[in-house]
Length: 158
Image 1 (cartoon, rainbow, N blue to C red):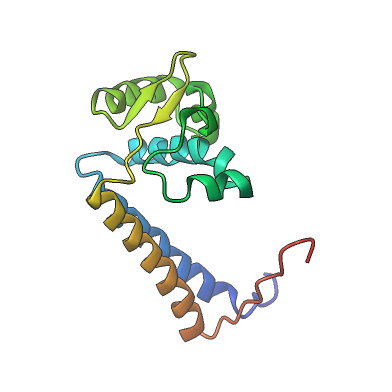
Image 2: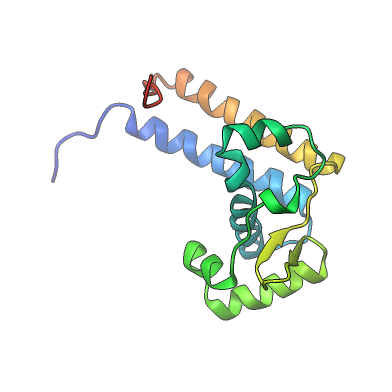
């Protein structure tokens, strides 16, 4: 038997479970009828599509309020990479991506890579994102309530 756990660990575990469940519920409301594996694929593709411009401060500012960023600044991802990142079987990814393409949630670019269909102008999507943000705020409030005062490290280079 090992010694005691760090005093904040159980509080973080509980709050993180609440956060993840809240985020899943927000997504499930927005993507009604989409199964959990497909939600995971959508998250993976969304991350790949946004990463190039969101992590570039100049591009991020240029597209901040654009209904859809230009295709040339958006990223894409292969089905193989989706399988690697999610841990889903390749055949599962292939089938689920095909269904998501048919549903209009994803599309295949000319190089055969997978991209999200731009959807941030959809009021339901905006509501889901606002709900997700509120879940994150509740997470930090819950940590405070449980006495888990976690120091957030300053960004590197400051």
